[in-house]
Structure formats: structure tokens, C-alpha cells
Amino acid sequence: MPSKNENAVLDVTDFETTEISWDELEQSLETELEEKFEDLDFLQEEHEHINNPDYLGETVLNVVWEQFMNQVATTAGEDFIRENRGLHLDLRKEAHIQTTENFANGKIATHNTEIDYQQRYDDWQANFVKDENGDVVTHKTRAGKEEPTLVKGARKPFDEGRPAGSVEKHTDMDHTVSAAEIIRDPAANAHMTKDEQIAFANSDANLNEMDSSLNRSKGDKSMTDWLDNPNAKGQKPDEIFDISAEDEAKLRQKDAEARDEYEKRKKEAEQKSIAVGKKSRKEEAFRIGGKALRTALMTILAALVKEVIGKLVLWLKSAEKSLNTLLEHIKMAIRSFVGKLKGLLVSTSDSVITTIVTSIVGPVIGTIKKVFMLLKQGWKSLKEAVQYLRKPENRGKPLSYLLPQVGIIVVTGLSGIGAIVLGEFIEKGIIALLPGLGVDIPVLGSPANLIGTLMGAIVCGVIGAIAINLINKYVARQQKNDNLGAQIDKKNEILQTQDKLMKVKIQKMGNAKEDALRSMKDTREQAKDIISDAMATIFHEDEEDNSESLSSTANDLADLLS
Image (cartoon, rainbow, N blue to C red; front, side):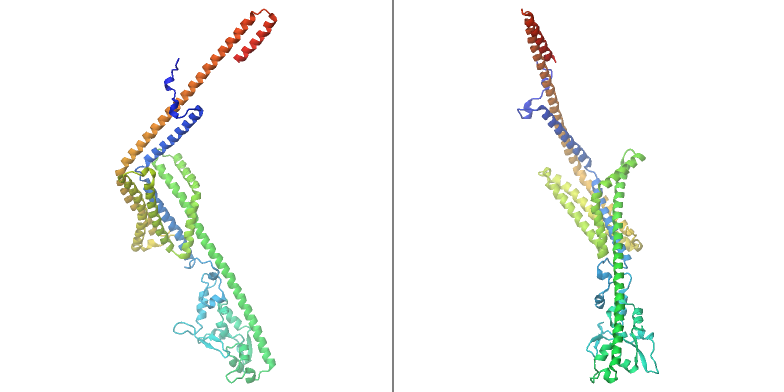
């Protein structure tokens, strides 16, 4: 007798197999059904995006966001330059620690915040006679040395405080290390102040009371040069002035002691230059570190604000507006922000690098980054258009379908590019009309830049939205029809899969029922045989054998029924 579900039982030929594991088949169909539902969800979501201007808004928003963060980073670098006395970032040793060699060659440690080495260099150079080209004029000494020629009055500061000799004794107070030698010495002028030079020159260690004629003969020469080099007639001072060997030895001893003290003071001053140079270098590093940290914090804070504003917009669009839903949207913004922290570190590092590069190169880096954004946005639009045309599902479609889609991609990219260009144009126009708005606000930059960026984004965003809307009106209906058709096909596939799954389940139930009936039939037959054997035993003549046989039969029957 056929089952009442016979017509619903699945035909095994539907599965193109001769050996069927119904459990595996059921699991396979359930998995397939789940995947088809996911495909349907995607199609329905895609349907919502068709003709949706939010994509354009997101593109323009990202461009404005990049411009804003670029402005923040660039402004931080410009702030550093202003606070660094107009000097760009330079942490090299020679920029902070003045060496004698660099000073002599006119290479000044301009970044040193403790000592104005440029002023020291200018004051030093003012002591020398210059030619029409500005080069120092030199002359040769009696010893054959070439040295710079001093301007008139260069020695005056050293002589003003110098103690006088004795008129009665016909003596002068001589600078053992002469004022001219100190004036010409790059080490003394690099590391010692003018007061420190004069203090040494007129110290007991350097002053020596000499006969006036000897002092005038010695002049600016060092003691050894004066004693060791003859005049034009070939005569040395000991011959001219009848200087004894003992007096000459005293003069040489005095010269050695004075020079030891002179070198000592110069060394102490040089160590001071090194110390203040290291301090200045460290301070500049801390300053740029502070600016970079401020940029990083601003980038992170701005990202959080961006997420909160985005979720507030969604809250305003939602049907239910209450304090609870508002708090829930804010929590969503915070969770989204935390989830994007890893990617945010990339943009943060980019902003920090922009700040540092701006502090090194100057504000021009901001313009370079804007140009880079233009190129990047243009390349992104071109790449997206090519990728769209290369998609397998778009191959073979008519140009009337493909070109509008490419047009939407291009218009979106051009809107981003236009926001940058127009924002720059508006900024310059505002500064020309209202120069006061070009003054930078700490951290954010100039109001003109902020207004230009915002207005450029709004204007280009509106124009782009209108253009895209016109294009979408042309293609949206076709897109939606295609999408709805795909949804219908997918729903039909789901129904077919559900039908197959239902038949598999019914088939499994039918098989289980047939197995149960077959098992019951087998049990009845076995019970019948056992009972027949028992009846035959009952009528057997041997009662003792009957008893044992009945007991065995009862046990078999119990096993069968258990």
C-alpha cells in the first residue's frame, strides 16, 4: 500500500548520485540555503545604496578631513619655527655646539639659544680691515706670518682699563699676550665674551711692567717672535737693548705663564660652549617633540570627534530620538573609534611626520601635500573606474550601461579634487580682502584656511551631488530593476533549495517509518515461531524435558520483546 506522502518523496535522480547519505545531503542543503540567504541580504543592501548620495559625501568628507589634518600638522610645524626664533629644525651638533674651526670659517651655531654666536662673529669681523669685496685685508709680520690687519681703534677697549706704568721709571704695562693677538684669535672670540677677553688681557697673569722702549719695540708681537726675530738690520732685541740672559729668561718665563693661563681660560670657555650647545640641542628636541605629540593628540581627538559626529547624524536620522538612544549611538562611536585605532596610528604617524618635515623644510610642505592629495584623488578615481570595467560581471554589458557608472566614479573623484583647488582659491581671496583672517590660530591654523576648506567642500559637494543625481536618474531605474531581478532569481533559488531540503526531510521520515514497520514485522514473525515451538513442547510426553524447553522458550520470547 503506497504512503500518503509518496508524491512528496524526493527523486534521487535530482542529486546526480547513486549512493545517498541523507544526513550529509540535509547538511549540505542547509549550508547552501544559508549562503543564498547571505547573497540575498547583500543584494538588498546594494539596492539601498543605488542612487544614494552618501557615497559622494563620504568621499568629499575624507578629502576635507585630509586637508584639515594636513593643516593641523603643518601649523604645528610653523608654530615650532616661530617659537624657534624663525629657525627651522636642526638637531645637528654644529647647529648648536660652536667649534673654533667652524667659527673661523664663518659657520655659526645659529640654533644655540644661550649664546648669540652670530653677534660674536659679526663683532669679531668688525675688527678687521675689509676690501671692496668684503674680504679681510692681511699683511706679513717680521716673522713672515700673514695676519689680518686691524681697524683703527680695535685695541681701544683693551687699553682703556689697563693699568699704567711708571713715568719716573720710564716703564709701560705690557700685554704679554697682546690685545691684537687676542683680537685675531678665533678661539678667544668664539668662546669668550669681550669682557672676558679684556679681563684676561689686563690680569696680573698677562700684564708685565717693561721699559717703555722695549714695549714700543715689541708692539703687537708675541714675546718669542719679538725676541727671536731680527729687525731689518739683522739685530735682535737683546743686542739693541742690551737685554741680559737672565732678563730674557724672565721675559720668556712670563710669556709661558701668561699663555698657560690664556689657554686655560679659553679651554674653560670652550667647555662652556659645549655645555650650552648640548643644552640648546636638547631643548630644541623637546620643543619639536612637544609639537609632534600635540599633532598626534589632535589627530586622535579629531578622529574621535569625527566618529561621534557621524553617529549623531545617524541618531538624528533615526525614528526614535531619546536620551537612551543618543547614549547608545555615542557608545557605538566610541566602539568604532577603538576598533579603528590600529589604522588611526598610520594617519597619526603621517601627521607627526608632516609636522617634523614642516619644521625642517618650512610651510612649503603643506602645499606639497595638497598637490599630493590632488594626484592621489585623481589616481584613485582612475583606478576605481578601471577596476569597475574589469569586473567579470560587467564584461559584455553595453556602453550605455557602463559609461554612466564610470561617470559617477569620475565625478566623485573630481568633487574631491575640486574641494582642494576651490578651497585654496577661496582662502587666498579671503586673505586678500581680510588679511587679519590669515593669521594662524594655534593648532588649527588660519581662519581663512578653515573657511576656504569648508566652503570648497560644500560647493564642490553640492555640484558633484547634482551631477551624480542627473547621472543616477538615467541609470538608477535600470540598476534597481537588475537588482530586483537578481533578488527574484536568488529567492527562486532559495525556494528550490528549501523544496529540496523539505523533500529530503520527508524522505528521511519515510525511510524511518518503513524501517520501523519492517522491524515490527520481523519481531512478530519471530514471536510467532517461538510461540509455535512452545505449544509443540507443551504437548510433548516428557514432562521434565517440557519444563526445560518451556523455560528456554520463555527466555527467548523475553529477549525478543525486550
